[in-house]
Length: 93
Image 1 (tube, rainbow, N blue to C red):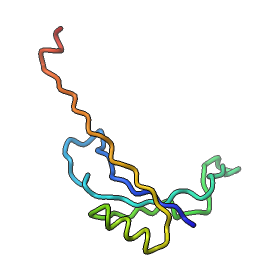
Image 2 (image 1 turned 45 degrees about the vertical axis):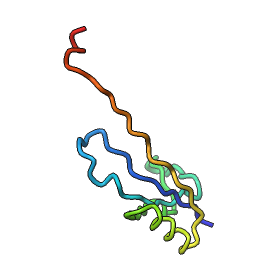
Image 3 (image 1 turned 45 degrees about the horizontal axis):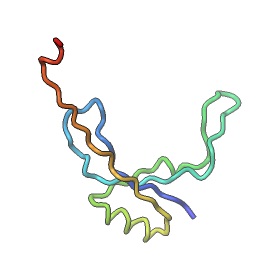
Image 4 (image 1 turned 135 degrees about the horizontal axis):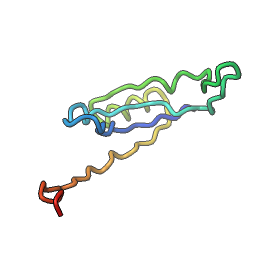
């Protein structure tokens, strides 16, 4: 049985806005470890299912899709948003 991971994408450190953070993503867990290619040294494998990411508007829609397809899934909670309150005057202490 394939295992899926359902999560909300965290905010990228390079973005200032909060656009598209409310979307839920479903991605497949890797079934086996990647192997090093003896010729190039790159890691790879024959399983391409972990390259597919499906987005859903709600958590319930993502769970319903996983159950309909017969995937075992686990939900990764969204990271807690930490506010770092700073004042400009703190630079001169």
